[in-house]
Length: 368
Image (tube, rainbow, N blue to C red):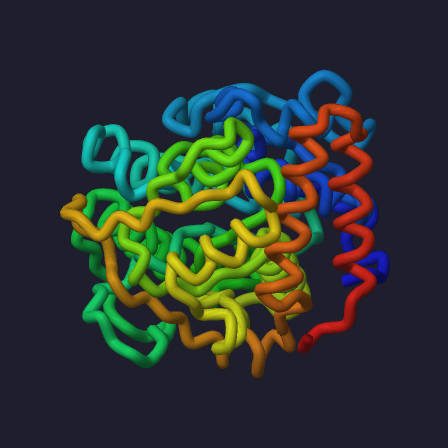
């Protein structure tokens, strides 16, 4: 991915002001793409989007449009005018627990927002003489969770117990319907659009300030020398640095441009089996890296339903895309803790720190 494939290509990102979206902007900036970000204001304060300069001082190759994916006329106008070769849809309500407090809002943005992005692409033709790639980012929680010890494959059924998980399953179904109805493989030469969905595991990395998420909750408590309550420490998740799935999304987008519908459909992006760990194990490792002010309170009490065991089978991405993780969990935690230490100290250039991590990541070989 360090060649010139993305140099000068137009990429539309929805949800670019979020944690993953901001990292993706920096990654695409390093690769030389022209980015249009379409999103509401950052979902947290502080935010990586603001701290790394993407708001007040964006790169010359990036434009920011602060708007709602639920506003279809404005979204359709943006897609038509920008005419992107690549669309990466990440705008979402991205947390399980808040979905219990606002189920209607969660379904609205995660399902109707996805439909609006796909409809905007349906209404606007692909750039003249070029193929177009659409990558809809959903979640590993889109699967009907049966607490299996083996990983979920892309052919397993969609489902979801809580509103967040179910909304992501619905987004997958909507994407499949649009692909079959408006971007069918047999007519690719006419519409020149290939659509795929991407399902990633739990991501960590510097600049995440969301509530009810493991690392940000620990950082807020540790910075104040307070203990942090870790809910469901026995729950097992596939952990990875945020740049891992983002690099997968871009590799998938490239294959969709180059080979069209041969790479359409669903794709899992997750860590190696050694990095599938419990919440408690990850919390303890992060606390040791943080230092003496880190104290954990493992809470095994009753909480709203969340999956206890969630594992992804990523053989498809490894075999057909040639995608492999570059960082192990220990190095991902070290990078993450180092970023938050730099932020807490207040005397580091956080934008340059993010850019340096992107360069270091791209320089690493696959398959570590």
